Amino acid sequence: MATVKYVLNEDQMPTAWYNVAADMPSLPPPPLHPGTGQPLGPADLAPLFPMALIMQEVSTERAIEIPEEVQQIYRQWRPTPLYRARRLEQALDTPAKIYYKYEGVSPAGSHKPNTAIAQAYYNKQEGVKRLVTETGAGQWGSSLALAGAMFGLEIEVYMVKVSYNQKPYRRALMEAYGARVVASPSTETAAGRAILAEHPDSTGSLGIAISEAVEMAVQREDTKYALGSVLNHVLLHQTVIGLECLTQMEMAGDYPDVIVGCTGGGSNFSGIAFPFIGAKLRGERDVRVVAVEPAACPSLTKGKLAYDYGDTAHLAPMVRMHTLGSTFVPPGIHAGGLRYHGMAPLVSHLTELGEIQPIATQQLETFAAGLQFARAEGILPAPEANHAVAGAIREALRCKEAGKSEVILFNLCGHGHFDLQAYTDYQAGKLKDYEYSEEEVAMALAGLPSVG
Ligand SMILES: *Cc1c(COP(=O)(O)O)cnc(C)c1O
Image 1: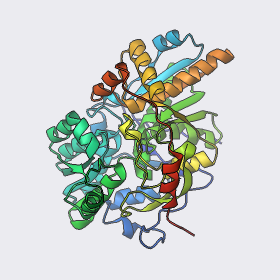
Image 2: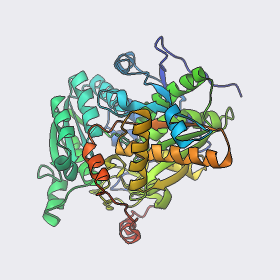
Image 3: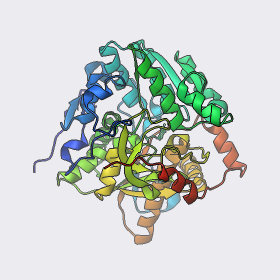
Image 4: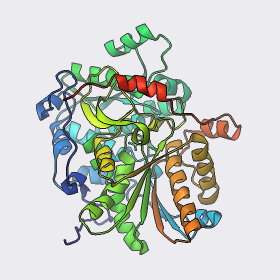
């Protein structure tokens, strides 16, 4: 089969996103209505999302054009740099070549604006005035707040309470961009009030915050909901990362043998990996792909592949994914962006097909990796990104042991400048590893919906 060529603009950026669904031998089964258990049609999703995004959600077209206005905003920080980590290679004394794509150069400091800008654009096009969302550690909230400022949309963010209290600077950034930030669970929604009635001291979870945001979004005609990960259209928008890597790796005269990314809901990982997995599925080039998740929230390595609710109050659609149960509240690791109970259906499905190899790493290993990276390369990674760094270091050491000079590519999905307290605590010996709680997960999994 002929190699698929991607069209670039004059700044060497892709002009279309890559949709992996076009090249998959089979597709994940459809999302289901949380109340009726019936497959969802576009009309069911219309209260939540603009039609353009719903159509992307179900599309099987390989290339989906990036609107000119979105390309124009991407140009403010894209293409993002691809670096060779020569000093880290030396420090590890590995024969492997390590490359990393750096998404921390976006205004919000992570990969998330890649989809926030696109989502705000399509909502604006369809006359939406206000977007409501949830955020864990605050990266998604600040990315959507940034996008809201650029398109003149009102943004309301339900922020998991433990982060709201522990990460005042992320909240400050969202408010600086003009967003309204509410600690979740809150008294503003029925979902929040129900949780508070049962657990007045609840520190919140992503599942609860999603319920609150969805509840608010469906109440007003001019308001919609935005999700920062998991859904097909979010993964689609993130493929600009991997598409740029294809060009940049070619300029460097290399092609990755191994690609490593961290997985919370799966979007930054998919962004870097899907264009390469597509080439493999089309029989063009082989590649091995490693997904690194926290041992404290191990949906891919320890979860069950089943239909589950996306949120605690069961307002969001059910999807078939690797899940730890929608009521599972993961321990308070510092990689807040990786504390989601489920995984993107496309990532789950590709894992089931054997295209993705998942591994889990403990918190202390990831912070040690992050500091080693910072001392060699100068960039301090986000705690989430430390999982990818740890995975890349494991691969580099494997190459050293085997005497193989493989090419490793990983996604440095964000910087850690808002996470310095976590680094201070790590250096003071205050962080610990968490055992995966088999009992708690068994309890959460007992609540899985029964789907035929
Ligand atoms: C949100 C976030 C993640 C986790 O989300 P994914 O959808 O799995 O990418 C990882 N890293 C950073 C820096 C984030 O902001």
